[in-house]
Length: 154
Length: 154
Length: 154
Image 1 (tube, each protein chain N blue to C red):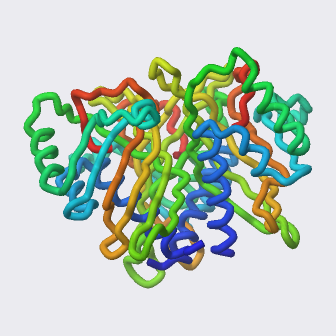
Image 2: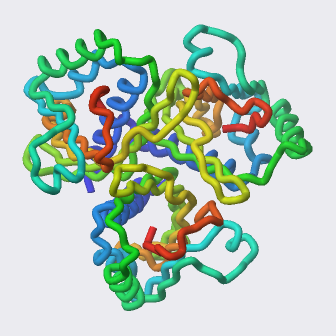
């Protein structure tokens, strides 16, 4: 096991989660490479090979657009999210590229204080080591029930 | 602290959880040594010293039987599980053997998408370092309420 | 990244959580320096700069008092708690001092077995490296709803 690699990947996941939890959505695209791909899907669709992502962005420009939309949509309530990440595994696939999987659980805290499980699932990532950025992040949600109106990055 | 040991133990826990979450139950016995002991109990029974495990298997053969039963039982619904593991501590107890404790939270996702907390508690493990397998895994659940009909590995 | 530092901080958080989950409250002050500061607050209050902590203790003596009060209060039900900690980040701020942030989720298990999410949020810590103790631990809860009657350490 490459200890330095393992901890660098865990740190990337942690900083990504911290940015989202602090509502610093504008930083989100910077965790991906310039042409990075980001996709939220469900385990069911993923297993059936259905190309119906809940959210899809190819490249930082699309991600920035997505953030803009979220900021201007009236539906964007000031709730909070809390990411828990667990079981990070990392393995090199080619020079400069590592594949990583991890489990996640996202908690949503409404403005009145009510707390609920918002999403669980796993991250399947391809990480460019040169800049420690996601070349691809696939967010596979366990539940088919998904609040698609509010498709925020996870 | 032995850094390599710590990360090897965390990796074992992560791969174990990934196998269960992906419903690769048949791989479960392989995470234990040939004569490995596996036991699910409750904190209450554990504290009182009551020998009433929810699930008990001694050796891989018994584990394989258990998986067979689960596969053939009608009660086995195609729900999903998601393991979150946290606070892994590891300490050597003898040459080739390490004791590990960790907290866990298992989420259950029903087929209609409903998500609930299924079990929480802690793992108390004895790990054989030669093959990085569990010589003993004790799963101590916090709640006395436990769906014993559906005694799946945790 | 200082690998040894990262793992030492993760281990401190894990041992702290294990002590609380095992109801070894009397050990809680020992995870802080003699004059350590401990504070539970809400994200809302923290953002507005409101000095209204849910629980505050300056120095181990105050912490011991708090534990005594909890032990003697009738409200202290024998429920269990389970801490999940994730996304630990650590960075040195001065010789001998490190700042750490981490996400947490605390599960409460009532005596009848009912399980609920009790609190989520993040730890913002200053850790004295000489003894690996908290010089300051600030527990920032996401939810404004907080069971203040039962202000246990988190």
